[in-house]
Image (cartoon, rainbow, N blue to C red):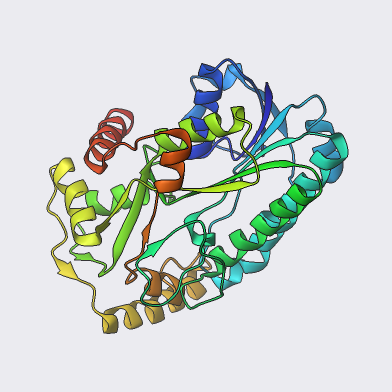
Length: 328
């Protein structure tokens, strides 16, 4: 198949591209003129690149001509309310334009990369499955809302004829861009020997597992389904402790207390307004840092018969790759 990929230059997108090439598929991928190609340098020449804006319908129509399938992974991730409108424009309206163009050009296969953030959850709930529907609780961040609305556009496409498959990964572990945010920031945090760890639990999944499952689902006749992709969950103390020890660093030993979070949110608000930079600690992230949800992986395991890599394997591999790439 000839597959159109959005979000190709990010951590997950780069591994999806590698998996597609390994399976013999052709790739046309979209990027911006200023996109970093660090994660794809060795295979960039095997990909047909188009430069454009996902909100430009004329561009999309040209980019999707001759395409057999789409993997849509592009999205803005932010918890700062100042970025909410931009996130809506990209995550929701950009997805609506992509869905409409696929329908217009009769591109049927559509795999959407969502997030566990878009799965509904309730207070005191522990295990979450694909059957849990969005309810709009305090656990739903502005990012989560954008991903939920994004999914609604994809499901609308399914009602109009798209063969939709949605994957909902948890925190994706892998060797991304060092010190530049994204899920690789959890490794950066542990490497810097931070003293504090959140009180809640982290859900995680290896980037290689997500990429392999995404391509298997794209190739399959399965559609009209969503799948949580999650290898497991751990208390943050154990989560960051394992990463720190694998780096040979001192693990965080102090739990972040609720009053500390309130102070941190206030200080971060001031810092972000003074500097103009995005706030990394917000009311949303403070609430999520204390949550103890576990996202069930039983549906995808039963459907495809897959097994997920262990946390320790993912951590050791990621750190080895990061050390080699960045001379850590």
